[in-house]
Length: 367
Image (cartoon, rainbow, N blue to C red; front, top):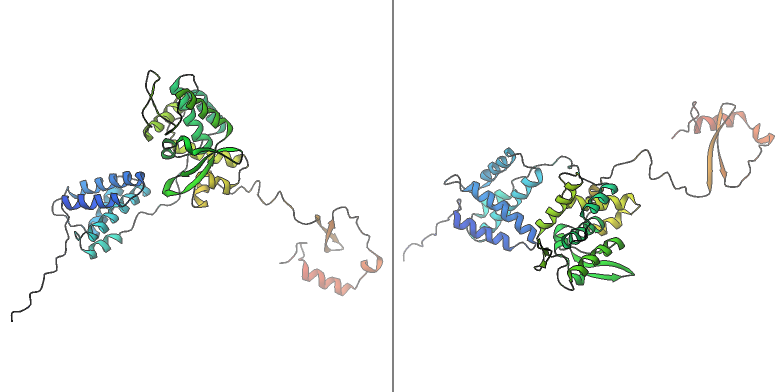
């Protein structure tokens, strides 16, 4: 009987271009959001171009760490670097699942740490006057002007994202509890929410849909130079160019569509809106994200706990009599009581003990 042949243990260390393309396709197919697929595809293309620039480069933890150093040398932001590293980690996992990479190497790649972000970048908010100027610059009687005005009204008044705006359909705008709203809007990460529509925003929306004769499907469509409405929708780049063009007409530079979303949150907060309701409006899963949109800072000049008063206590005054501080509390509408001779001439030793136990020599209560 012959000796049993032992199968060699192949440990794949290097991924060639066909293997990288196969793993990349597996990563993109595992993502449900079109935005996530777009970002991951760009990040993987960047990594594959860098990885293939040097021949016979192994795909392991050291190489991914070198790639992180390469991204840092380009001066990219921490969020951008972490997004690209997350795509590379997912690429390694898909390659290991397909048998193209050793599981030990994939586990080592997953341990590559991202870049720490210290603090948050300052957001960009517009004031109410600037918002009015932008809307006035977009207002007009042409078909394109009506569309642009309705788009800006939805961004300012409802705080929608670009992807949510271009995907908005006619049947999603419904009447709920006597108020127009975008019902069951599917936002980022698959979160479903209902967005109320202000009256002035609904008026601008009706003006556009009536002029364009839109009765179903996507609300916002492409408009030719001659004023003809065509197509089944628009891309997110159209929203970007509309916001950029209208803001530059009034002298506002470097304004993105997401800045209008922040502005909507800030205007709601300054108008007295509750932060929980603003969270529902924007569709944030965490209240901390909403606070960053509002640019919340502690205001010690007007503390939030100053306006209210509990119970029927009107005032508390410190009365210093004969070197002894006495705390007197006066209810509302009560008349001040006169001290009797017996109460005023109490035991001197007891009064001294009470003064020393409750107050210091400077008249402040001890804690």
